[in-house]
Image (cartoon, rainbow, N blue to C red):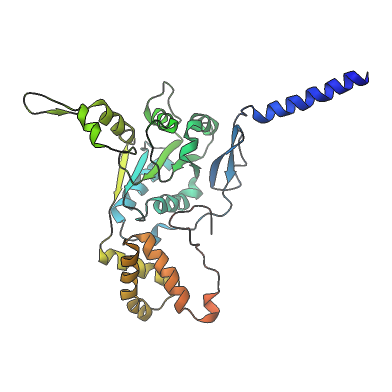
Length: 309
């Protein structure tokens, strides 16, 4: 009898070890815990973790991107209202507000049922399971991929391509993909890709298969929103907006003009992110002692991060 009990104990231990390495189906989180979630790998399975602290960005906080703001706001409003809307690819210069604009749209429409799920590029192979999990939910979900780009042969590329427009099953109408990238075509483009191009007698050029493959993913996003480097005037406008946010006086903002330009010159960029970082440094070093140590409403990660207040 003792031998049988020992055998049962060993069998249970073996099953427990097997369960730890076998893939587990994705389970639903507490959807009331947050308006934003992260998909994370845990062992052989994945989990949806609620984001406890959402960056409190508002659309009014984002300056000099009015055209981009209007296009994304209109598409998101259509989606939340249950009308046809497009998957969106936001591309262009770094630090110009691509990810911040998505977060501001989330805060704008959260009360109307909009939710966001952040998925890393490495986890895009699990995207079909994620879409199946939320397909019957009443909320409207944006699956958010930040700083998206692929190297040759990455598996996530095919998974995203199929979800966007290529599987035999139709994607649920309560899900859209919003992605940001510094690359328009999401894959590295090389001179050798052009060697496959063909030319007709009348001068027409037909791209080769390599070029067609690299363009095909970005073309599956129905809406492209492009961002461009800021001019000096636009950069100074953004600096002033963030300095006002931190309570700096108008006289001090005018005095900050030259230091902010020098800051940008040292960083090699006149972006919204650089303007925000200068404003934090300037406001912190010029604030009264009792204000300098006061907590701010927005952390150092606001232009890029999602999860800090």
